[in-house]
Length: 139
Image (cartoon, rainbow, N blue to C red):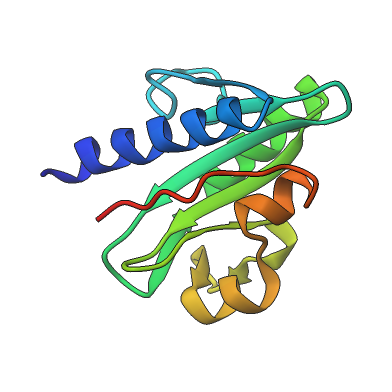
């Protein structure tokens, strides 16, 4: 499976998990290729709106270019949404990090598996523990 297909599959998995937990959630096709800032998915309920940039990686560290982070920040501010990075590392569940939790590398931003486990939230924590979220993973 190529990288783009794996990313699309990951986005679709998150859309399913949010919707099954009672949230409204959509995948934004073509995000990243539009001239306008847009996240990979938008999720919300009656209380919160989340703009999420999703990444599926085979590594234990994922890098993000400055412009990708700035576009997420810009969109979220205009839309009134919380900015989140969702990362699926190999043989792990999804972790969600706030932009402030990313590490500045000088030329980009980064998130390691260790950082995600220490600072990140699982999907259950992101949605609130009252939600019963099904456990799925990308194998």
